Image 1: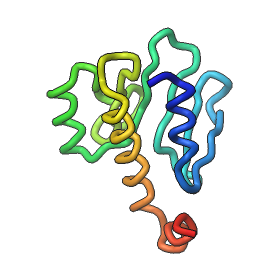
Image 2: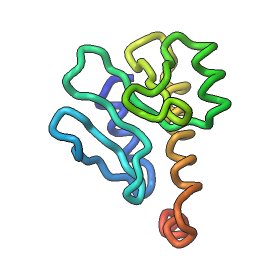
Image 3: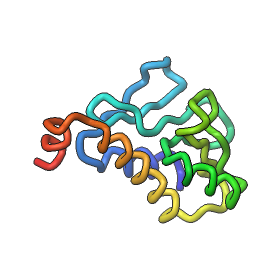
Image 4: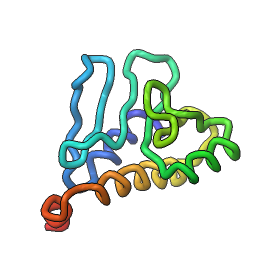
Length: 117
């Protein structure tokens, strides 16, 4: 998955906005104002930080060398995933979906209902 496909996939989700809150070199995707994915634009390697259930995060790190503890993030809840590696696009989409859904689950009920409209 390249960065354009990643961006398009994230933006296809309900309630998502893209922002640059940390400066022009860090692209951040938020759902209802809460971060679920971010990537550096100034790196040669295309990696993405994604939220993940802690047990699943550990399992993914053990199973895939492309999945590491979240860089500059809470390593219990975030993974840094190499999107330029050998992982299949459908698997990467699943990781994005999981991150998005974890964030949506924590939103207030009224915000979750807004996303369904």
